[in-house]
Length: 207
Image (tube, rainbow, N blue to C red):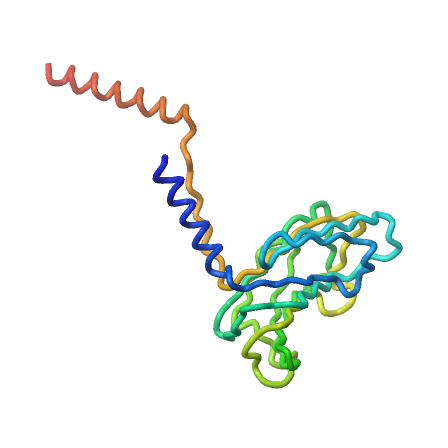
């Protein structure tokens, strides 16, 4: 059991260190009123968000900007991942065939835009194949200073009043999910009983 816990700790540390140097701060939603939501940064490149005003007159477009990005030396061949969590019970509504756009921009306004199909909260990995040549400007960025993700068109992805969720950004693609089954204590007991029975059978056969 100790060996299992140690391996799990190493796996978590490796995942965190893969993008530990990249930070994204100064998040905001340009199309939402500041008094309608509360945003709390929870990590180097993640945040929780609560739309505290349940009686907002209009639902804001889910257009999110990270205004300060540090230590991301941009490589167009490197994938990156955006995880959108929460927003239960229809917290986000979106049109059919909606695209989630993600833009990387440097300090002199060179930018590239990625696009992947959006299907609600989940894990989205952006790869070189997802770059949209018609939605960029200037040269390929060498460093990233600002990131933006949204449904692009107003109303493509909408946040409903009272919704809450979380967003996390990481470099690289997530590892394939590997479910590790940890036996229940009763399972150990049944296994022990089985071994005892086998030992008894073996003794009887020898006699």
